[in-house]
Length: 206
Ligand SMILES: O=C(O)CCC(=O)C(=O)O
Ligand SMILES: [Fe+2]
Image (cartoon, rainbow, N blue to C red; front, side, top):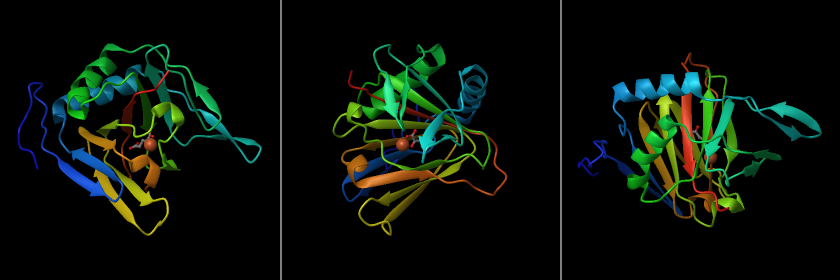
């Protein structure tokens, strides 16, 4: 545990979760509740949200959440058969990025936003291992809104698991070999939960 704040006024108290082949660092209160409320509402209101679809078994299936992609102009991004061209950075997104980068000790040129409108929205098992992310990507995941469970499982042994409750104002950094050996997902929940926004800051190799 580090109990020291930094010059940005972030709460850098965190927990390192060392897995076999991969490391996570979880900062439960990286942003204050007050600024987290403001970021949440601004992002709900001003993001260019879209419900994208992917082709699965010959039919178009809607992703069970809303998404948006922002970043430097040269960072188009492909997954599940889609190519996303980024929207230009907004002041809010640059503000969040600039708060997170020093702690992640890297630079980011893009961000994927996911909006889970209710407990019925979710994200399936996957690894963020697209070639454009490079060999061992550092991904900074920021959470505003309802707390949701984030599950990890070892690719080779699904009984080998880890779980983190990602809370309002938290930051999760994924790094090292994590994406090669582990998958993650956000399950649906039958509990009545409010909306949640997750932002994953990434470096896309042009
Ligand atoms: O919503 C989350 O916490 C996970 C997001 C995620 O895994 C992704 O965007 O790749
Ligand atoms: Fe992911």
